[in-house]
Image (cartoon, rainbow, N blue to C red; front, side, top):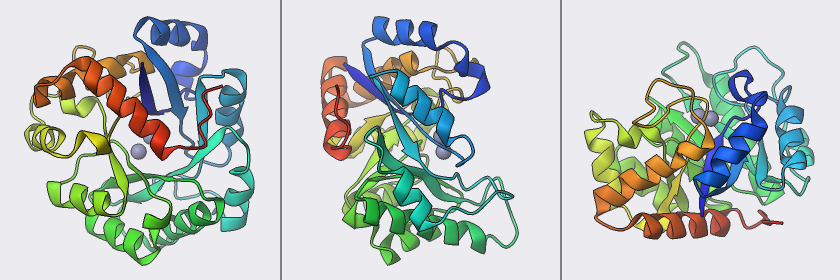
Length: 257
Ligand SMILES: [Zn+2]
Ligand SMILES: [Zn+2]
């Protein structure tokens, strides 16, 4: 089976359709999905999904795009991360594409999440956009290698992928890898070790071909896996088996039942 390593099923586009989404996952052999938090306000919604469905997991954290909200503290994140269904810290990271100006608060928030992850002993889900250099630097300065994690929806260079892999991180590919114009990304999906690859949808965004532009859902992660299989000249089953093993190796607290 496959695992969707990153989705937002509590978002309004998807939250009312959980039974259908689960049915589609079943049909597409997508056994599990990790529902990722973007604010502490909405964390209870994410956790409720993971409590209601045995095949859904949750993360706790605050996305770098949300400027005007209560800053999370290390203590609060660690406390919320104690729940057995919370298997990761994030999504966190840096985004210099969506927001500009003095983003010191964003870097501080990122450091807070890394410190919380180390205390909670749970891996990080890292979002980075137009900010790869600072992202890698802060990961190194804060010792993110101690807990590892995943560079989600990866769109950066091979050098960034390698720097993250050196710190024990996994690289997660989204539907972008199915897009015709994602030429550099396809090369990375072809060349980095399969043992470091995860697959995700980032639902409801970034639906893969042939659903590009539509509302995404975890079942569609099969198209991401198929694209990686095609690029590497291996079978879909190999990608399915290895990325699922990778997921459960990284998220060792993810107890399937
Ligand atoms: Zn993200
Ligand atoms: Zn996300």
